[in-house]
Structure formats: C-alpha cells, structure tokens
Length: 171
Image 1 (cartoon, rainbow, N blue to C red):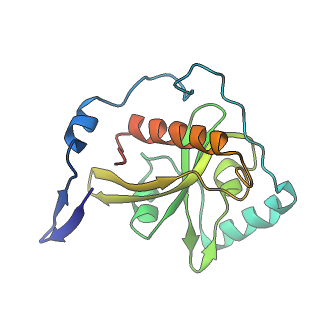
Image 2 (spheres, helix red, strand yellow):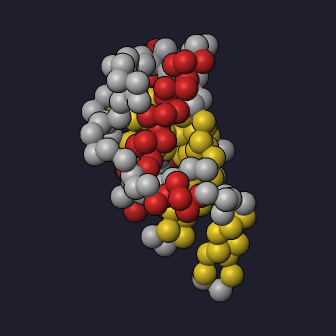
C-alpha cells in the first residue's frame, strides 16, 4: 500500500504494483493455518503465565476483550492504532488493541493465556466494510521472545493466512 486518504466519507487507497493481482488470488485454503511446507506447526506457549491474572484484570478495567474480525469492536480497535493478534490452536484469529487508554494489552489477553499457533502485531486501515492490511510482524514478548527466525517466519505466514481468510491482505 502506498497511500490512504479519507475525504467526505470516501477512503482512497493507493496500491503498490501487483497488489491487485495478489488480492485476486483469493483468501487461500479454508483449512486451519498450517505451514506451506507441510510441516506440522508447533504451538507457542505463553512464556509469562505468572502475569496472566494481572494482565486480564487490567484489560477488564480498561474495557478490552479479545475480538474477531467480524466483531463490531474490531473497527474500534483498529481505528485507534496498532493491534496485537493471535491465531489460536483451533485456527481462530483474535485481536486486542496494542495499547488502550495508555495501557499496553498483552497477547496473553487475546489468547486467554493458552498456547497459540502464531502471534504478532499489525496495523490495519478500515473504513466501513473496507479493510486493508498496512503492516504486520511476528512480535510477541509472551509467545515469540527470543524465538528463532524460522519460528517467527512461520508465525508471520500463519498470521498473514488467517488475516487473508478474513479478507484482510497485507502488502
């Protein structure tokens, strides 16, 4: 994506070359996320389980809960900055805002502290029913802290696929 502008209720998105071709390929397989090389994906464990109760309490106090892309709060979260995302062991994509009311929300809040297939952060442009990925990365202090590059790359692949299945494509 090269640019985004909103004027008089109309969002205009300037795309990079080949972006339309990438989107036209479709959202990919309907199966749960897996790696392209056919190797089973290992679940990532919460590396800071001792913080979960406190993190969940703080999230409740500021009014944050994990949401799906189809949830009305999805737009509220993505329109207020970066988000944190997880793909659960069942292949479900859940998000929370990165920061809400000056409080950082952890990936463990999104997953309920359970193991995940992938985790990361993203920026999404959304207006009405139009949603487009701006940036995505595999970053999580709870699930990918000091993870080898191959594990992070696989998490990114799984995240991209989950967002694509929800109709959100990243450049």
